[in-house]
Length: 326
Image: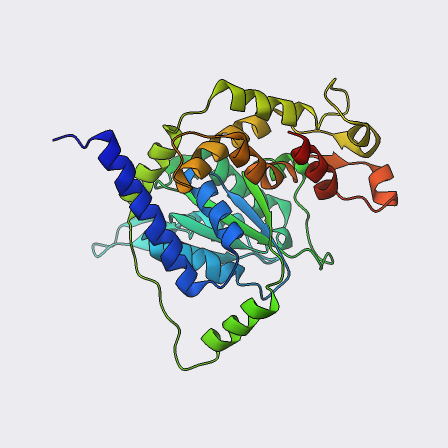
């Protein structure tokens, strides 16, 4: 018997509540970051996490993988990492009968949830191998294409304070990330709780609540959340206001922005607003959800100019003013 929509919605809300509760057992604070990571995951979008070392970025991603029942792989990006170290390669094997043949050995990219640690520490050729997999959901080795298992999500990390020996991602490649999340320091109270939890004999391990098919079900449910025309107009007004040559551009944008966000930003805002509405238990997306996801969607898609750099004005500051006005 087909499940009734009301019963299905109630079940989805129970699932979301359990995920939030279980994540809080392992991660102290960072409630907004956790919500945004879950939003990105429901949108099948990849995330770039920017923060100094020691802020539990790896723990956060691995914890989500455990709770969601997804196959998790961590790839440490280094200057000597090769594309084959990510996607895999074909190895010449000898059979028992003495025959030789090539056998494909899958790389760590063949997982559901990938943590690309310090993605800017590896050369562009290796970065491109990962970014191709992110975009196409497939890899090609020796002319043979292999599909990646769904769901497939990449959470990449980047250290904002070290630039020597790094290969910054170009803007065109940054645009492939659904969100850029900037992770800050915990409060004194949160850090005290972190010390209490992590310096004892054992850590409280979160339970596994879902599996890959159930995560796919949540992703499909996020697509079905209604998006009113009024919210679409809010999204378009916000995105167009980031473009210096637009009639909606503010004086700050005209003075401090070189390039605004493109149509992909509008698509990401719409998808994120739907998913966040689902996470918050709302029957449809609203401007409140658009405001909540606007900064992580736009901050890596809006390029500030030299005027902003010279006056110490950041992209986040420019966007914060625009978001308040919608």
